[in-house]
Structures are given as structure tokens and as C-alpha cells.
Length: 185
Image 1: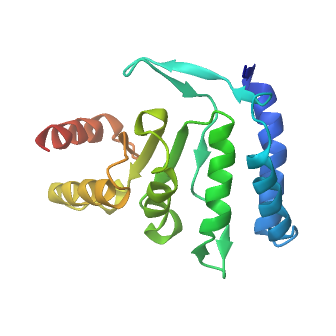
Image 2 (image 1 turned 120 degrees about the horizontal axis):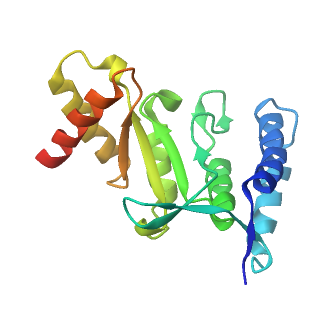
């Protein structure tokens, strides 16, 4: 039986893991040791692992993890390219612990984050996670560009995107436009 973990405990545990990830990104930790840790964890019995606390997401009636996995600062290999092996193992680690909320954006990793997360999550049942992608509204000069960015995000993330959010002061107007565009498809 899977144990439940409250948000505070999860943040403490995941925070320690985040410090390790930061150390790895800074070149302080040995990449192979981190990969070995994640591989060993995957092989261990997961029945005693405490799951991240969830909350009801009312629009779909499903449980959403209170802790999400952001893809803004994935580990890099060679300075610029996403270290896909390590980043995928990190995502799998979080998923095994009940994280089902993943966040990306068009501008993360020079446009490569959406493609990466789409590939990394395709092994899991689509209804088992939430993928949120932020539209770069600061780049939208005319309304038709919204359509282009929206379609690109859906294509790049391999149709996995559940919600497109807009990062702008005009959230209400942009959400209305996104709703209209969503209905148009």
C-alpha cells in the first residue's frame, strides 16, 4: 500500500533532491553517480514509497499532485543540449513518487523543452498526468500568431498538452482567446 505524504514533507524531501540537482548542474556532483542512484531507485520495491499529496482538480474530477515538475532548468549536456538520459530519469523518479503535474513552456531550453517532455511522458497513460504549456504571449504581435503558437505547442508535445496557459497581465482576455481557438480546432 502506498503511503500519503503531506506537502511540507514532500517539499523537504524533494528540496534536498533539488539541491542535488543544482549541484549536478553546477558540476559539483558526478553525473554518473546521480544516474546510478536513479537507476537503483527504479529497481527497488516502490510499495513503501510515500506518494506526494494530491488535491482534486475540479474541472476534470481527477487528482492533481500538489508538487509539480518544472522543465525550465533541465540538466544540460555539453552546455546547451538537454541531457535527455538524466532528465528522463528525473521525470520517472518524480512520476514514481506521485508527481503528475508537469510544466513546460515554448521558451524553455530554446524551444526544446516541449519536445523533450512530450517524448519523456509518452510511456505513461495520457490520463495519468497533467502537462501544462505556457504560450509566449509577449511574442504574439497579431491574433493569427496565437493560432500558430497553439498549433505548434500541440504538435511539438505530441498532442499531450492538457492546458495552455497565458503568462500576461491580460490573463482573462488571453484565456478567452485561447478558449475560442481551442473550440475552433
